[in-house]
Length: 288
Image (tube, rainbow, N blue to C red):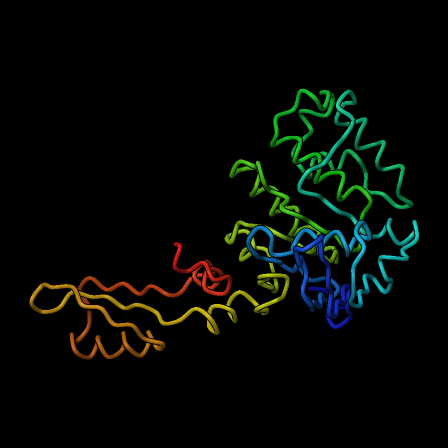
C-alpha cells in the first residue's frame, strides 16, 4: 500500500439495489483505502457485479451513499470516468481490428494513457499484436480486456472476475501485473472465485452473502476469526493414528514433543484455509 493508505478511494454506506422481486444489495457497506488491493468474494448472485457496476457509474442504486475517488458515480463527469478503469466479466471489442489497433484506439480516450506497446507487453500479447481480435482464443481475448482496463493509467481499477478463461501461466502473469500496478499506487478492487488469487493479491478481503458484507479483514485475520480449529495428527506408540482438534496447535505440538522426547512420528498440522472460511461464511460448508 502507498503513503495514501489512510485516504478512502471508495466509501459505500447502506447500498441497496433490487431487480424486480430480487434483492441484489441489502445495505452493503464497504471502504477501500487508496493504494490498496481489495478482494470482494461471494457466491454467484451475492451482489458483487452489481456493486462494481454502481461504483463505475454504469448502474443506478435504489438507496445508499457512494463515493469513488471523492465523487458520486451517479454524477461522475467524463474526467472522473477517465480515472477509473474496469475489466468486466464479458467484454465486446471490434472483432475486425487488430490487437494493436484496438489498444491504440482506446488509449486516445484518456488524457494520460500508458504506452500501448508497454501494455501489450504487460499482458503478454506482443506476439499477437497484429492479429485480428476475432482470431484470438478466449484466454487471449481476456488478456486484451485487461489491457483495455489498464491503458488509461487509472487511479482505481475495477476487476470483475478478470482471470476467467486464463490458463495457469497467464493467471500468474496477470498476478505480476496487479503487483506492478499496486506498487505504482493504483487502487484495485478485485472480484474473483479463485481463492488462491484473492489470498495472493489482496491486502484485505470482504465476503459478501445475500447483498451484505458478512466479514472483512486481511486473509490471516479472517482465518483466525472464522476458520475454526486446527487439526494435529500423529502416530501413537501402538502405531495407530491420533488426532487432536485445537485452537493452539503450536502448544499441542510442544506437548507432543515432550511426550515423545523429540521427533513426533507421522506429525501433520492442518490449519483452516481461506476456502474453509469462505464456505463457512457463505453457508456452503455442508455442501463441500
